[in-house]
Structure formats: C-alpha cells, structure tokens
Picture 1 (cartoon, rainbow, N blue to C red):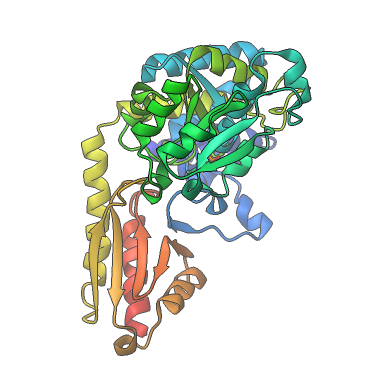
Picture 2: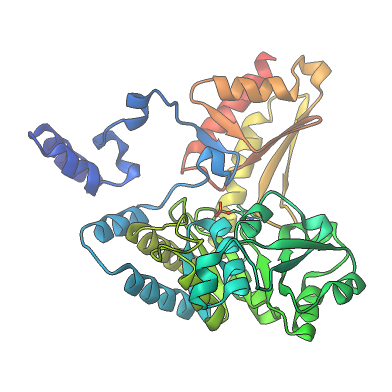
Length: 399
Ligand SMILES: *Cc1c(COP(=O)(O)O)cnc(C)c1O
C-alpha cells in the first residue's frame, strides 16, 4: 500500500503543475516524493542522536501531525475561536482548568508572566514591558537563573533572587507578581518544588513553573498544577513532537485568559511577537492527542532497545564500553553513554564527535564528556540506531 502510494505520488510530480500538490500532501517520511529542499539550500541534514535541542531543530513531527497541519492550512478561521477551541480540547485531555497554545515554552513564560503582571487590564497590557504602576517582581531561586528567564524579563518583570524559604518570606511584598520555579534546576537550589508552591499559596501570589522538558511522564502535565502551581509552561516541540515553534501554558482559567489577552492576535500586546498560526495550533493539539494515547511502556522499551542496539554495535571495540542512563530530571528517557580509553584508541572524545559530524551521514550526539560521549536515541527515526551504531564503531575502530 505504501509503495503504491509512492508510485502515485511519483506520477503526480511528473505531471506539470502537480509538484506543489504532491509536496503538500505527503509527509516527511515519504521524502522521496518531495522536493529535496535542504539540497537546494545546501544545508546538510543530520541524524539527531543529540536530543531535543532547538538549534538542531529538536524533533520531527509524526505524519499525522503534518497531515493535520496541512488540513488546517486549507481554510481561514478566526484565530481567537481556534485558540479557545483547542485550549478546551487540551484542558479536557490533560485535566487542567485552561490551556493556551504558545510559541514554545519560552513564549508561555512571557505570556504567563504578562498575565501575572497586567492581568486582563487593557491599559496595562498596552503598556508592557513598561510596568509603571503594576506589580512587577517575580521571585526566583538564585540557583535557577538561566537563559530562559529572559522570556520572563521580556514581559517587564524584575527578577528577585532568593535562596531559602525564609528569603521568600522576606521577598514577597505588594509588588510581587509571581513566584517562578524552574523544575529542571530544582536540585540546584535549597527550596523543593512543592515547598515553593506552598509558599506562594501562603502569600496568595501566583506560582508559575517552567517544566518545558519534564515529560515523560505524561502525569507531569497535571502533577505540578495539582501540587499548587497556578501556571505551568511546557514545550510542544520536544518529546511531544508537535510543531517546533509550539508550546503550552496550562493552569488557572483567569490567568490563562489573561495570557491570551496579552498574546497574538492582539496587536498592542507583548505577545504579538509570539505568533502561532492555525497550523501550529492544530498540530500541537494533534501531537498531544497522539502522545497521551501511546503506551508509555512500549515507548520506553523501544528507547531501551535502540540504546542496546548502539551498544551492541560498539561492543567489538575492546577499549570501549557502554551504559544506559536516564537523567533524573528533564528529558528523563533512556540515553547511552559510551566511554573509552582515549590513549589506547588514540582518539579523543572531541575528535570522535567531529568525525561523526563530518561523516556521511552527518550525526550529532548529545554531549562530549571527559572520557567519551553521550547519545540520545529518542529523536531517532526507526532504523537510524543501526546507522549510529555502525558509524560509532567505525569511528572508534579507525581511531
Ligand atoms: C526547552 C526549554 C525551554 C524553551 O522551550 P521552547 O519550547 O523551545 O520555547 C524553556 N525552559 C526549559 C527548562 C527548557 O528545557
């Protein structure tokens, strides 16, 4: 069936004027029938053994998502109506009060902050990021400071750093707009994730959490909200494999509604630069439905199988050994660590990474470590684990 479809598409592209149609209706998995846009551009694609890194384009959408986006592209709609309808679907699916599709988790941080600062007040919304006359302080654990807090500052927030629960007690005042927690950095600070939510509750201030990369488990979509967070930001283009420029702001209805008022398509609003189109909105919803319906155990087993396949391919190299590991927090999925004696192989980890990158096909890995490298398998396409394994063995053997 697949091959007859391919033949059909091939016939289509050979008809004058039909190329664009074939290009639209086929999914990336049927790349043979599509234009080779990357060759036209001279941009060399890569096998993603690195993970969901934005600069490597992070994830590939399943075919059903691409098809839903194409279906969405065929009509005009009122974007506010579409946002509301998809928000309803997502909140029903995840069991939260409200949801807004955003331009990535970073945009969810900006919009959630804008909601906490300006609320639904039109004048205040127009003024942001100028926060004159508004609550604008966002309390953050000092050890959580990271590049993504720029998205919070974009809304006009002034970050107030704290280290302990007592610091939070002292920091909260009538100008406090929100308490913000970066879940991935939780272990680096002294305040635990649930304790932080409780502190916010105690002072009647919104608690906001960035949990962008904290799926799986799927339960995390609702866990932090149940814990007491009023808002939570998630990525759509990471494990979910929705559109790369999509994300979600989940949580309290009044705050999510306020975030929507601070968002595109409102022109005089801080979120006007955070546009998601109808295709991304529908694509994210579709990706989420697919993801929550998948069997998590089967997904996990497949990731482990890929790790083992790559480890087995590298096993003939005597000076090297492999181990499967799961990051404790964020991207908590099976990964492979390959370590070797650089002197015995005459090959440094940096050289190995360079050879994988420069070779054919181009392969990017997760990280160079002191005595080897780390490989992510969860963004590989089926069968690519064989290629990664073979190339890794070749690189290690040639030294
Ligand atoms: C990836 C990530 C983001 C940004 O997510 P996008 O969906 O790419 O905007 C924000 N915070 C953390 C902790 C992340 O890992």
